[in-house]
Image: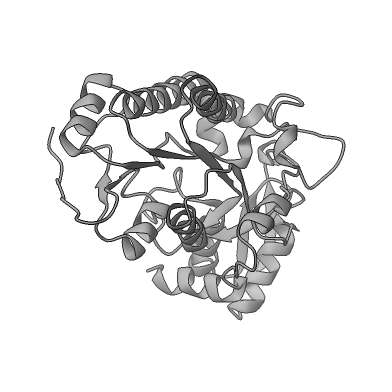
Amino acid sequence: MKWLKIKLYNMDKILITGGTSTVGKHLKEILPDAIYVSSKICDLTDIKNVRKLISSNTPDIVIHLAAKVGGIQDNIAKPAEYFDDNILMNTNILKVSHEYKVKRFIGILSTCIYPDKVNSYPMKEEVMFDGPPTSTNFSYGYAKRALAVQIDAYNKQYSTKYNYLTPCNLYSEHDNFNNESKMHFMTALLKKIKSSKETLNLLGTGKPLRQFMYAGDLARIIKKVIDNNITNSFNVATLENLSIDEMANISLNILNKNLKIKYSKPELDGQFRKDVSIDKMKKIIPNFEFTKFKEGVKKVYDKIS
């Protein structure tokens, strides 16, 4: 196992897991001196490797982006793998960060942590435990939810100042265009739009509601959390909450594409809605300007070959 060791002066040393992920690539644009760790560099499910990673680099701040992720069909087929791998990664990096006295730990969760259904929307942070996650990716949702519990437990027992952010659905020109099972939905949609001739074939019914955020915005939020020593945990999302069908039609209009949308396999809809409140975020980071959807869509579309 080997990794790039960087010494920083007069500032905190930052180590970022999931360094080649979509958000990791955006962070590299604004935090170029951080240590970026991918699964090829360190297997986070092996605690011995994690101890070597942290002891060799002695970071002050750990940003934990790494996760086993995939589409609905893969989550349905391999729930045990998604749970085990994510639980191991989360536990190992958090435990070892504390062992080596890392000052700040920022975990990145997902709105999959929230219950399949709640009494009112958008969902505030406090409703996380008001029911089970949606059945289509329940094990991933529980594993991410467990990280929130672990971080809160460390803060309570050890007086650490660790926190977590819970972002909505992301899209980016840095997404993995070659692996559809790991592609974010919006990126996969735009790739299909570009390759389709007359009909745009989509899975599900198009009815589920989603918030979509440009991944670079999450990277900027993370940097603000670091720069301003913010230790609160909160949701990160845009205010728009649109159906998949609305999002597809808006994208077609932005890109001047005339395609007929056809839906199949309604059982793959996933959670009907999971929009989250950003009231807490607006108090902590007021006046944050999200990337306009039209601008973000064009950035991604132009990158697709």
